[in-house]
Amino acid sequence: MKISPLAPKLFPKLPDIGGIDCYIARAQYKEWDRCDLTYIKFCEGTSVAGVLTQSKCASPEVMICREHLAHGYARALIVNAGNSNAFTGAKGRSACDHILLRVSNYLGCNENEVYISSTGVIGVPLPIDKADQGLDRILDEKPCSWQQVAETICTTDTFPKGAAASAIIAGKKVHISAIIKGSGMIAPDMATMLGYIFTDAAIDAKFLQEMLTKANKKSFSCITVDSDTSTSDTVLAFATGQAGNAKLTSFDDAGVDAFMAALDSVCKEMAQLVVKDGEGASKFIEINVSGAVSDESAHIIAKSVANSPLVKTAIAGEDANWGRVVMAVGKAGEPADRDKLNIAFGNHIVAKEGAAVEGFDETPVAQHLKGDAIEIHVDIGLGNGASTVWTCDLTHGYIEINADYRS
Image 1 (cartoon, rainbow, N blue to C red):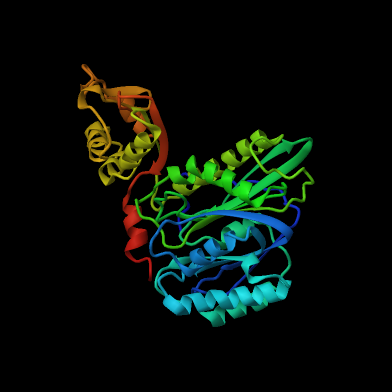
Image 2: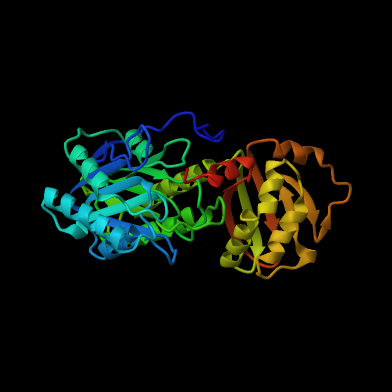
């Protein structure tokens, strides 16, 4: 598979996180020559939080995570790649329950401390025999690196994705390491991907959930590749407490601002990496909407522009067709006034107060569109609401990948 032209040159160096060991093995969920099963073990007392797909046809794995998050603690995470196990009825749930039982018995913990995710083709039950074979292998494996885990959770991704950050909490240095997969079916209002965030900070589970929800709103909920929301996907955050800091329980605690900034940074970086690996992507697009009646209204308008096939194909063709941006603003259903609307590509205003800029020179705009990082600015002219959304262009590559995905 050809690597995305937007991929970073190297996988980042992610710090080890105290209280965590990672393992990979081959379950052979598909006929491929690679590992596709991940097992991550956490020390006792690890807190967990999560944001989950809003799909009404969610997989049993998502339902299990929802149930287990109420408990707030984790001892293990299992990730299956190549089979989403979604829309598989009782068979799909039975496969998950079998895995939960095996892993919890092995660790001597409660089943509700084991989390599970699966990604791949919808509608095919996860084969229990292959899961068993994979578990037999993985429970005997030696620990592996973050990069190996990031590679193992991939499906149509063209490169493994990771991010890291650190912060000081009351004199104690804490670390964050994170991995994510996703390149298609990306249009979340939380997360349409599998993403996992790991920290050695001590954080109360309920407060970790508050922080993850807040970080998600500015990151995973601000990306789209194709306007489709997955049935399966999940972002989970785990805090082992091994850094030795005083446990964070509220935004009033010392060091919270530093940790929140680090978490925001990691989530934003991971979200953008997913877009940069959008199926068939050749350009990374940032859409900034300002002047809306509210931030929420600005977000809806920005998503409308980002999800427009006409806008995305124009960018792929390096065509400064600002009329398509006007169309996408108008169809969003949010307050807008044609005669107050301003549009710019990069630093170049192309339309102002409802009309093309007089004497507009398309040359510098065309030059901007030849790059692989594109900016579209939309000023609604009605208020102070603002939002930024990230997407990618729509090329023939997207069709080639998805036309024969199952084969």
